[in-house]
Length: 88
Image (cartoon, rainbow, N blue to C red; front, side, top):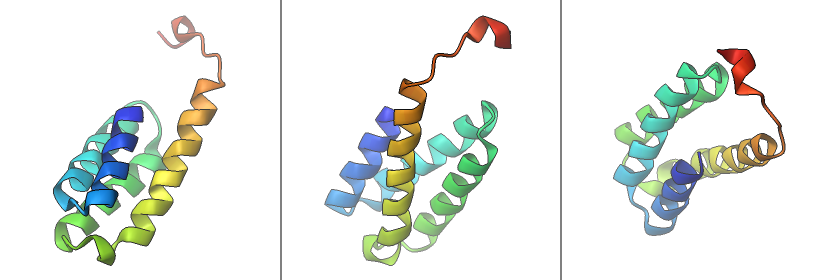
């Protein structure tokens, strides 16, 4: 998530739609795979939106909102002690 967050932030700063698209696309599949379905669906929808409108200004608000949500998710996960052996 931190890598994706970095790519989204860099992509927004440089208006690099391809970088933002790759980050959203990557996190969509990964999130759905590990059980964050709603978050993954939003990432997938954003990846489609970015691909359809490659001008950063067209989707800045939505991507920035997703970036903030990702920062909050990273923070929550860092503060959560998960015993992964229970999930195996």
